[in-house]
Length: 379
Ligand SMILES: *Cc1c(COP(=O)(O)O)cnc(C)c1O
Image (cartoon, rainbow, N blue to C red; front, side, top):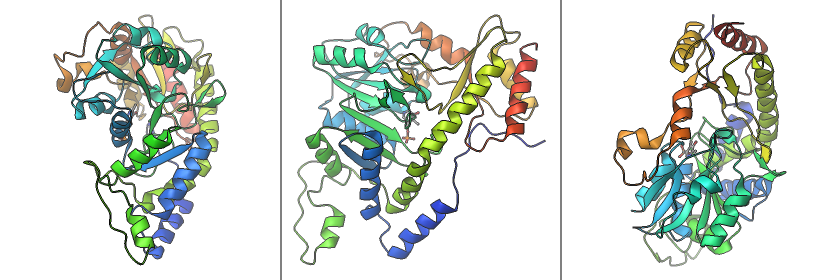
């Protein structure tokens, strides 16, 4: 029996051909393909500016810098997220302050954020966890009232929708990941998007050592212009090799979302009679790309989360524990940013698990996962 993996990127010869073309062109670092990918991504996400970077983590760091976050500030983040969300403010000397999440989506809400705001809060990072869209309207209102920046960690959420529009556009600045654990992949890679032209231009410079003339521009002119460095920048560039893959992947994104939503629907249908199993589902305000399909193992399920993981493993099915809680990790143990209890975060992180879901998941594999879970649930 083949082991079923929890995820697998959807890659093919179109991607390898695109990389071969970039190699043949002789320009492999950040250049024309990266610009092309940025334009295509901005158009797909319906935002004015997209700046390609090396990862979502670096995109988050730049997002906070362009939003004006400084050392000593407070930045509200969910603890219930991949640890990069909390790390981004920490890199700047700002303090991540943990907000709890709602149980339906696993996302922060205007209420959970408002509960932990301080005089020092200058930004919040709200996450579309596992692709579940945030309820951005109330968060937008809260941030406008308080004059604080709304940064969206949309790492997992390319293809997720909020009230009929792509997520990401309601925030002041958004960050995306192209790690293979997400839908659209470039191996490693990320994107910063914003409708603020000044912020986009600053991010563009900062990702390239804060040089005022990009390497591509310098290379394109015979008489090389003299560059200058207005502030301390970074090397957060994406390569044209990655961007070429990204362009092909972007063309497949809508099909990926459609397939994932279909598979998530099949799981939900198969599990609806099982007592004690709560499945991820769309909130009223939007649709998920189901980057992760999680289930919560409730007290009336015949076994606990760890036992269910063991049962799936015995059936040669890879599942994963649900989203981590940053405040429970050694890196943030005893951290002053835990200003309130986080009961929903702690419940979800202890009791959820992620089931296999990817574009090329075969029918017989889907059947095996469904049978294993149903069997564990006493059906
Ligand atoms: C994956 C992920 C990140 C980090 O993305 P990288 O591209 O690997 O840096 C950040 N935030 C969330 C919510 C993620 O899921």
